[in-house]
Image 1 (cartoon, rainbow, N blue to C red):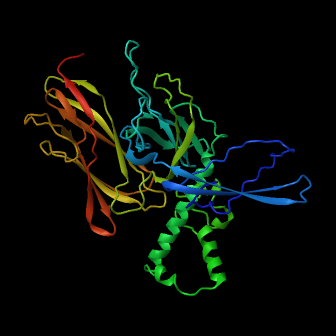
Image 2: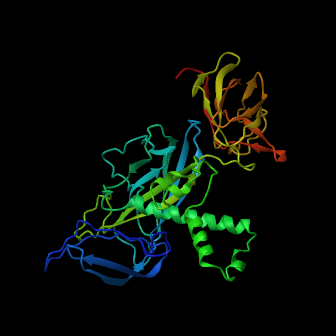
Image 3: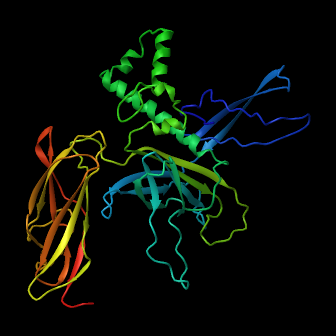
Length: 442
């Protein structure tokens, strides 16, 4: 059940088949509500009940006012993984917007978990590189936020091969999914986003004349057909099923009727007088408040666009080498992958090695004029034609070093051809692949 401005808010019915009351008996049950707007809200319910033989029915209206406070604000960014060309890095920026009172002595907001929902992708946590010594006080987890604080969480995004559609990364205490309908609220937000997108596409298709036509007299049949088309759009693009009318917009199946590039995210949070994991004990009775923030249609793979480069790259090379008498050659393998959507056309690109004295525009360089440079032996320019989506290219190179130092092997320029634009797209990847060349063995 939701309060307003969400698909399912008006006329949404929930049956309570196991709730039976005897004379003078009382029972309690929870109703979870969610609002898409801040400020005062007027919530109204209609409870319908009947006797055991269903011969008499009555309706009891219940209404009350609530104040919806500002909670979490979640944004995302997708970055390529420069260690694995088949993976991506998801950055979740979370801001605790509460400021309706004084700052709390103990942070009360805890990010419980992050759940991904997709038949193509899943998220995984990064492993901790080191442990905090037992003599030091462990730092506050990044999933615990004070009022007006922000935090960024990073996750690995990889291809799903297990056949499941949802996986959860736990960050705080356990929250039973039975107690909070996370998937149901995600379905409602997803349905609302679909209707918004349909209205926007229809307005663009009609040249923005939708508002001018809204004042014209229309028949009831035409209004019904329009409402039905909003709920069941006959979409066939981006891998969606042709007969979308067979899937309810607010069902879990509708979450999977989306492009292969998409991923849905649920950020589940809990607020109380003391956050889990802070190490601070409080005598105040814990008032448990659980909520969620949803991100629908997070694009993982690059869409078919002339302004986006779908290529990803990584390097395989030794991290430490010993300098020989005159020079040292090191074998380097450059892995390139076209990570565009499956229905995208193939791309043609040219790989160029930068000159030894040419600066890399996407990587911060040293201020020293005598910083070491990399010399490439062999072919320094090569064109790859019509590389299809999901296809990979391995390029074997040879780097030459004549002096000791720390070198950056990212000395590549990619020139991507665009069929709809005579000017190619020049791309530099903003990452450093460092190698240390020493004069003696460690």
